[in-house]
Amino acid sequence: MMRLLFVFLLMIGSLSGFSQTLVSWDTFAQVKFHRQYSETFGFEVNVKPPEFAPTLLAHQGKEILVKGYVIPVDVELGMYMVSANAFANCFFCGNAGPETVVEIFPASKLPRFSTDQIVTFKGVLQINKEGEMNAVPYQLFQAKVVK
Image 1 (cartoon, one colour):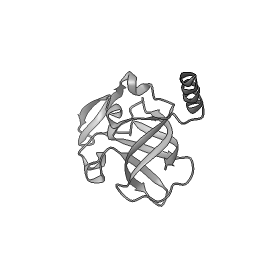
Image 2 (cartoon, one colour; image 1 turned 180 degrees about the horizontal axis):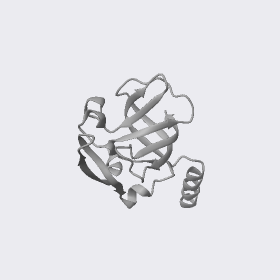
Image 3 (cartoon, rainbow, N blue to C red; image 1 turned 90 degrees about the horizontal axis):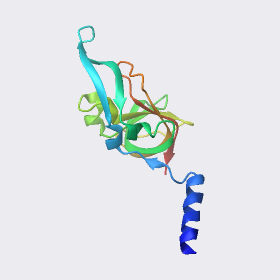
Image 4 (cartoon, rainbow, N blue to C red; image 1 turned 90 degrees about the vertical axis):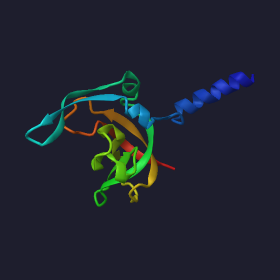
């Protein structure tokens, strides 16, 4: 009887949205970029779409959780990214790759965050499979802060 109750509670939890998956930064790192130096730009650019691991693609279009350091892009417009690394070591400072950040598209206006504040976001993951030049490969839509 206890076993049946346990299974029932698990099913209710998954149906009611309590079972979002926290996607780790190791999972986001399961991507291979094809880069080449560009004389035009003076740095390496993507020359064809990235290759994403099946374990990563399994999260495409699903509601996930992601936890990391908040990187303000435009505080006045409420534009943020969440990063695997603190600002001093993030993608934009040259010490990591684009797979270490997720662009946040909020469901509603977000509170003001401090740089490097650690926050967990919940939202629907979209993977940029087109690989536009130096585009962020991950976006989180309908994002909300998880308390």
